[in-house]
Length: 99
Image 1: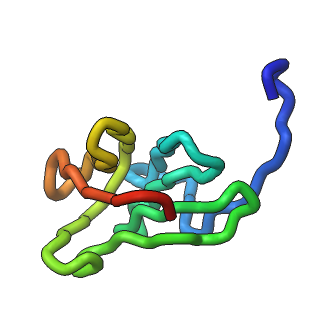
Image 2 (image 1 turned 30 degrees about the horizontal axis):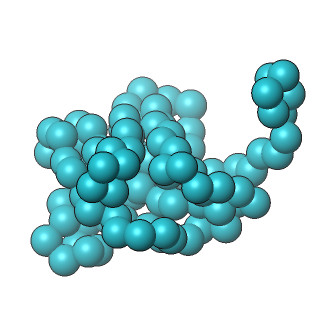
């Protein structure tokens, strides 16, 4: 909340406390949160209660190559998710409207 108190939380399957597994988070202006899971080679969109709404990984969508995605940012002007990937550099993934 605005006072810094935790309102809710959920576990992210695949997050680990080890080198090269540091996750990234990004908000897209909705109630959802994007999370990278480097060791799984995935980027996921989670609802506020922890449900996986979308999942990006190598081949999904077609042509996408993800290795170990870490940092994330959301570019609102064209609704692209920017992904820093340790294996493939900086990627720009169009995510379209809503989950």
